[in-house]
Length: 114
Image (cartoon, rainbow, N blue to C red; front, side, top):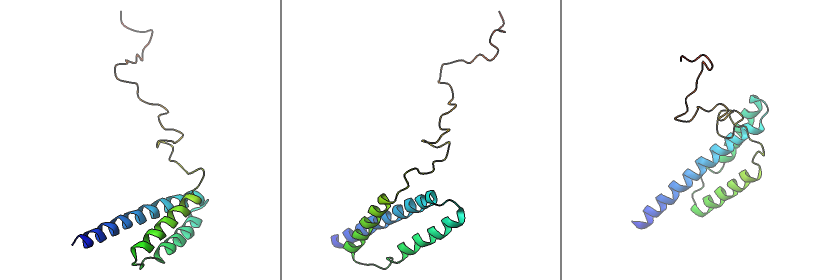
């Protein structure tokens, strides 16, 4: 019983690692593509690489394939990835942040009622 539970837990962890690796690689493929039609071909090639090993059943071989894929992803990661401008790390992130609590902004400065 413990062997089956351990096997299922390991398979679930492997599936999660593969899913995360595919998502990161697909997003990074978009960084390398200059035009969308080039991205579609690269994304299709990436999917074919993942599908080629879909029916591997040996857990040790699967772990080795995942480790090799993660190493290859780290090797070919884009040095300057695209970041959405308003996301953390983007060019417009916190450009005009709201004022902190307790600070009052006077819009009619010099024309206050006395």
